[in-house]
Length: 433
Image (cartoon, rainbow, N blue to C red):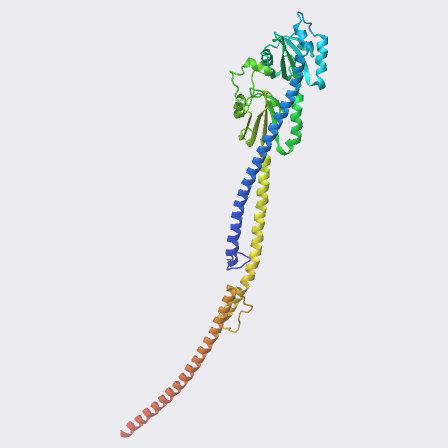
């Protein structure tokens, strides 16, 4: 049975080509895996570095926006009109002159509202009338500014039900804090910066962004189901149900799988990054966290590695196609060469068959300088030797035939003489009787 239809029964070419093709496929596959691993690591490191840069730039830009708006609140808090208002014995609620001043400073509508709290935490002047008479002494920013410091907080307003970034400054009169000036910053001002960068960069990063407060609770996300979810397990000692109700208008918050990032927020780390397996969608992801300057806010960026995996798959597919093509091309080239190289062997086989049939006249010509040429010359010498040997044998056979013929003639003559002598003897015996 033929082992390889093209090359015939002997399969000598198959013995050469098959190991060669298998070797190419094996080493080609190993090379593809090695290259794929190198490409994966390079792309991963590149994306990690890029993600780190983007996260830190985003945190820096957010810090600049907050600082710029904080300056406005600081300036209003030290204006003579503000100081005089809180110094008066009976300040007028919703003082028109002070209200106009607040509106004048709200250039570009950076604040959804600017309001002044007295020492008890009650709003006495506000660009949003709904705030008048409301007491916000429970707010963190109020407590911070009553201690003579700048205040900042992110929370859902109990009056408006809308999320806001609250920046505050103490109003100090004769060395005493008489009240707190607060600016509720429109979240869109800060988040517009994120949206702009996301449109510019997400096309090649394939990432998602969100922002958390100092407790690790998400206060901005492009995905609604993540809003007001915690990165990890909430600590009741830091944020009990009542506080959650006041800050996020929810008593129970959904918990996500970013516990290490949650710990980093609680430890006030400036930056952290890791690669992990997302248990929800079973994909590997990179998550990066960067602190927003001196503010209790953190930019979190998450990028799945699907794009990198797709790139690696493309590389493997390309290398695999090249390896298969190389194996097939090598097989065809070697098949052609082997077929060419085997022509002298095929001719030798035919001549050998002719020699076996008694035809000693054919010889192999067009001999080269390689091993096949040496084999051909040896074959020709063997054929010549066979011719000489045949001639010698024939000569010996003729000699022996002639000798046997002479001997046969001699033996026949002798037998004839013996028969004649025997006849004579018999005749003599008959005569004596």
